[in-house]
Image (cartoon, rainbow, N blue to C red; front, side, top):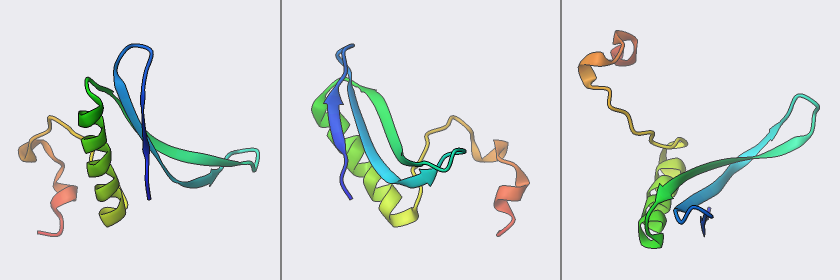
Length: 81
C-alpha cells in the first residue's frame, strides 16, 4: 500500500492514503481515505505517512493521538485484564 503527500495552499503539508471502498446510501462505490494535514515540512509529512501506513497494514487501524490517560479510559476497554 502506498500513499501520497501534497502541499496545501496554506503552506502546510498533507498526507493521504486509500483504505478501501465503501458503498454509499445510493449504492455507489466510494473510495475511503485517511488523511492528516498540518505538517510544516515535507519530510515530517512523509515520516508520518510511513508510520500511519505501517500502523494500518499491521493492525488494520490508524493510531489517533489523544490526551486521555489510562485512568480516564472506561473499564470496558480493559476487560481482557
